[in-house]
Amino acid sequence: MSRYITNNTNRNQISLLPMSLDEMISEDNPVRVIDIFADNINFNEMGFKYANTKMTGRKPYSPADMLKLYLYGYFNGIRTSRKLETECKRNIELMWLLNELKPDYRTIADFRKDNITLVKDIFKHFSLLCNELGLHSKEIVAIDGSKFRANNARKKNLTKGKIAKMLAYFEQAAERYLELLEHSDDKDSNNTVTYSKEELQLKLANATQRIHDLTKLKQHVNENGEVSFTDKDARLMGVNNMGFEVSYNMQTAVEAKNHLIVAADITNSPADQGQLYEMATQAKQQLGVNDITVLADKGYYNGECLEKCEQDNIIAIVSKQNPPSSTGNADYTLDKFKYAPEKDCYICPQGEALCNVSSDDTKEKLYRSKACKTCLHKDQCTKNKRGRQNSTWRISRSDGSYG
Image (tube, rainbow, N blue to C red; front, side, top):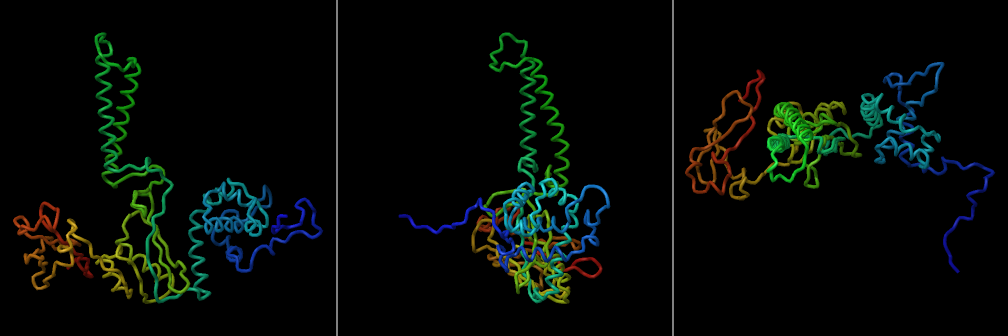
């Protein structure tokens, strides 16, 4: 005889007392926080569509209910409007949160589209609420970046290298079609390709048009580095799986007490360098403090940002970069080059001086040595044909110059 845990209730039986959804949602369930948060937002002041309803016409869904659905989807990784529509019909938490409302996917998508800029302000509202409740620590924040994949396929992203390869391919194709046209009436031709003259002319026209379009794009890419057709601001970036994706670089600052995000920003720069001061300033303003300590990894190590942080009462604790030499030889890493301030030069491991060769009005100081050309250890130190080159950032003066 089998013995299993069972429920003897009949699913077809009509209960005398209706089931209570509230009893099925635990007291510490995050949906209760979402419910309270959304109900305490003044949607009229923020300018949400349908915050004020008309006396006639079809009734709209409340912005509060739509925001609850949107936030629930965000916290649970449900991104698409169609999936959110499905969850409204089967998810007990959403049934409780929306009082069993079931908006269709078009309504959900339109809410995002009509209020996209306002939804961004919800984060600021939430951060202020956490601050009022004393959930933020105001002494230390940690800053880091994450790559978020954009809504843009890789084949819809063109770089200089891709355009060069595509141009070469279509130019070769155009030349091939021209050759075939020239011999299309030659009865003695050994060509095995059986295209009619009209088909060849059409293919040649298509290849020529493609070359024309790519040539125009080439100029745009040369000016901007790359172009994305669907998500125009997205850029090709290296991601954690050692591959490349068309993405955005999401910068976040997290406070130390409850690990809540206090500042966030999005950039299409693949590197974190240059973002430290901007994110630290945002966190400082959001927390309403005069000084703050920020933690970051070595990807943020940038002399200019560190100097700005020091001027703005921001204590920046950043892992120091110790990059290997381009040859991978540990004896010629950057820390092996000792700086001599009295001569403004670097002394290499072989005792040669790398002197400052940059002009006075540039932000970056470059150091090189003529001795690299005849140095017996050059291949161990650098792959640069001109020899080893070190660089540092200048300190900016109040008049805008550098020293």
